[in-house]
Length: 252
Image 1 (cartoon, rainbow, N blue to C red):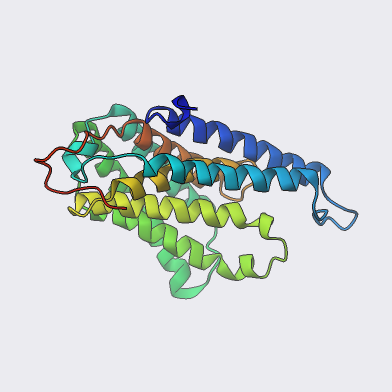
Image 2 (cartoon, rainbow, N blue to C red; image 1 turned 90 degrees about the horizontal axis):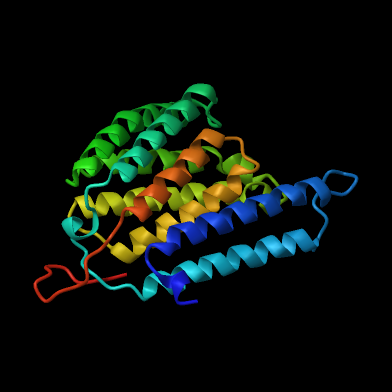
């Protein structure tokens, strides 16, 4: 149990649980449908998926609340080739998503979805190059992907809200939200307002939720590379312990 709370173990545990949840979800939609193609109420696989998801989210909260350390960028983000690669993969995934899919909203909102998605590509590449050197990027490098993910959620609101089965869209919604907040709290670090527990917690949640969605998704490039982006970022995040000299203490 003590090992499961160790800093280095957290991304691997969340990735393993996400893969298991994704497999359960896939099996549910294979064996848990009635003759009308609707999910059977209170199916054992549905209950297992619910318990696993709630348990994983509780595990993430339980784990990050026990962590202490500085909220300064330089204390949390060392130079990392793995984290840089995660940014490059996310850039490719965001670009592929908007190039090979049509926006789910018309007019200005659909245009914003495509423009922000394409603009996220150079932003994530530049942020990855800075991450490799261990230096903070301009906060816009992560804020633009955050805005894209926010618009992505808004674009899909109408189709999701009209679906009577929450499991059809729940992990797509939560996965995009967790990635959005992961990008936001990373941008906050670069703006000098970091919150380490929130950034870590949202990254771990993104790993689990995006992998769960990946097994049955309309946007495989987005959720696969999003999970890898969050995973590599969390593996490379090695906060120093809080010292009296730290300029900023821990805050949720």
